[in-house]
Image (cartoon, rainbow, N blue to C red):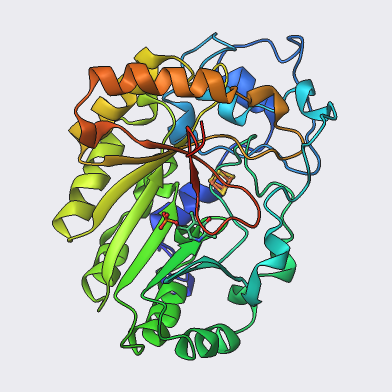
Length: 338
Ligand SMILES: *Cc1c(COP(=O)(O)O)cnc(C)c1O
Ligand code: SF4
C-alpha cells in the first residue's frame, strides 16, 4: 500500500499523544487494575471531566487507589460537598482583567491566560470554574492585549498562563511571540506550564527552535507536586530546555493525602533539583468549590515547612504562599503579624 503522505497534514507527535489522553474514569481505573466500583469515586464528572495523559498514568502504582498521582486526577464524591468559603472564583480574577485574558495584580508583571486547554485536569485546580471561553484571546486576536502592554512600559515580564500555554501549537506561540518580541520594555517571558511534567513529548525540536529564537529571557515555571511525577522522560525534556537556555522553576500545591508530609516535600525538592529544576512556590490551596477535601491547615503547612527548612539547603526550600483576592502580591506564610 502506498502511504497517502501528501494528503496528511503534518501533526507533531505530542498532539496525537495529547489526543489519546484517557478521558474516562472507568478506563483509568481498569488500566491501574483498580475496581471502578470502589467506594467514593465519582464515575462521571460533568463540569470538569477527567483527563490524564497515558505517560502520566504509567508513573502511577497499580492497584493503589491512594497513589499520589492518581489522587490528583481522580474525581471523587467529596467534590460534590459544598464547603463554607469555597467559591467558584476564589481569587476574583474576573475583576482584575485589563484586556481580554490579561490579569494584572502585581507591579511589573502581567499574566496572560492563553488558552483554556490543559493536558491534565487537576481536581484541585482553582481555574476549574473559570470562564476561559469568554477570556481567551487565543480564539480571536491579540490586538487589544498587545496594545495594553504597549501602553504600559512598566511591564517587564509577561507570564503566559492558562489553562496551559504549551497546549498552544508552535505556530500560535510564534504569532504571539512575534508581537511581544517587538516591545522593547519586555525583558522576560515566563511560561507557567504543567506540560513538561505530564506530557514531556511537548518539548520537541519544533518547540526548542521556538525557544531559541526568542528575544526575551525564557523562564519556565513547571508544576509538579510529587517526586513520582519525575521520570526519565521528564528529566530528558528538562535537560533539553536547560541546554536551550531556559531557567526552570517549580511550583507545587500543598495537597492533603498527596504531598502533606515533610518526607515527601523534602524528596520532591531533591528530585526536582536532580532533574535541574529549583523549587519556587508551595501554594496553599485556593478555596475553589469542589476542592475542600485537599486542604491542609495553615498551622500544619507552617510546621511542615519548618521541617523542610531544617533538612535542606535554603535554595531547595520553596516559599509557602497563599493568594488572596485584592492583595498586591502572593502572601507568604507565616504572615508578617504572626
Ligand atoms: C503568581 C502570579 C504572578 C507572578 O507572581 P511572582 O511573585 O512574580 O511569581 C503574576 N500575576 C498573577 C495574576 C499571579 O497569580
Ligand atoms: S494543569 Fe494547571 S491549570 Fe491545568 S488543571 Fe492542572 S493545575 Fe489547573
